Length: 234
Ligand code: TMP
Image 1: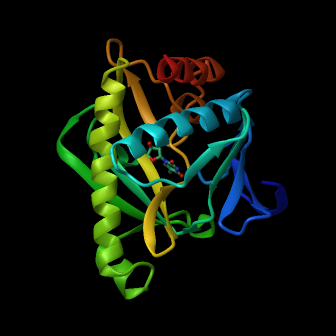
Image 2 (image 1 turned 90 degrees about the horizontal axis):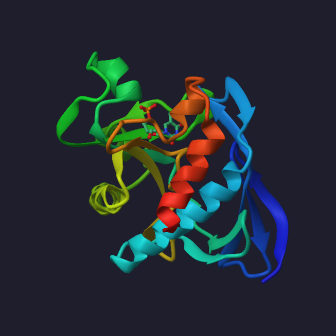
């Protein structure tokens, strides 16, 4: 398969067409942004970590019956994926209060939630990715009822599988964001699952092992990305 022209460049990845219209190639960059692109930087090696770690997790999820866009890892930074059309929604699942949930509801970071929460945000940088509810999603035609049900069920199933998986490598899954795409009439898990899109805390010490180290200037950013890749590679 040959990599073709660039289709899209996002904040952390580029997407290329290929000579087969069923597939794209994704290239992961080291660029890091936070607060809707206001804070910019580079995390050396992040693209490699996010590419390899996402692919390991997508394979694990596929083995449990969750369809993903993953097709084939080409090299450290590039992966062939199904040419999905991304649903313009970010789906966030939380197990422990942190980040915007703690700010919005005035609850301490680290508070265990009685059950996982599910949130949707409209994927629109110009609008700052505002939260959106089911009735608004349906009213705007962003997804239909069946798709909404599927996306919610996939998000909660992915949470169960990831929570178990990470607990086996000494990591607490605090929260995460996924994106889904449409492919041959099905909803499939797309984008990435990485320290950019999840909060990971060490199970023993609660040390942050994710992009919050970049967002909050906590230092040792490259180190924790590398450590997370080492843990999932064992
Ligand atoms: P939040 O607490 O800032 O709303 O973030 C919740 C989760 O979503 C956290 O794991 C980080 C992830 N996330 C993204 O992947 N992309 C984003 O643009 C934002 C704001 C959060």
